[in-house]
Image (cartoon, rainbow, N blue to C red; front, side):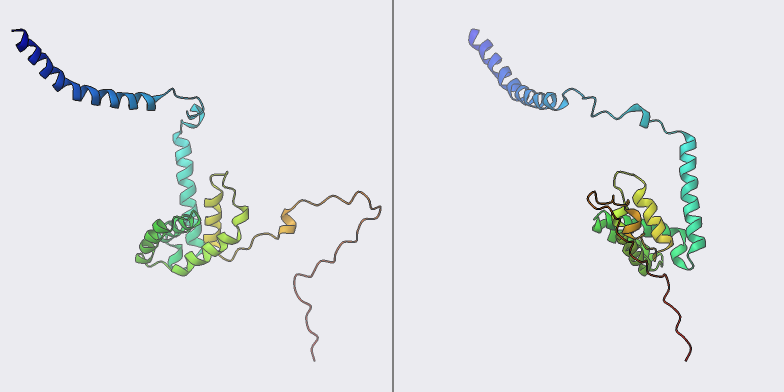
Length: 191
């Protein structure tokens, strides 16, 4: 009788040992991953609530951008679908997501939108590259929109955007200002 009980117990133990071992290994990994939630990992509650007024304002802003593009650009590049897809292509190219950009560019071409406008907009965006602040969320999108509306836009000269340098400490006399070139060349005298 005793042998029968031991055989039964060993059979039960063998059947339960493998699933029990698997359960312990999985539970150990799950406990190790869960850990305590740190305060720095949690998002602040102030950013979480989005009011309907904010959503309406953002929607109105997007509508106004499409209307502005339609009024400023003649031809298919001003169509809302071309504006939306083209701006996405330019942003994706800027972020080096070329695979997704090319997929969007295929859609852009299917809608009959001009590919040259994307090229000109990206060229404009590259010129404004140093002025785009990655810390400001809307900086890239607003610059892409501005370049989409006017691909020939030029950034302000670096001299105008930099603050004036202080005068040298050792010299008593200030250096003479360099003459500014005229905006347009002088007219030629008639012959």
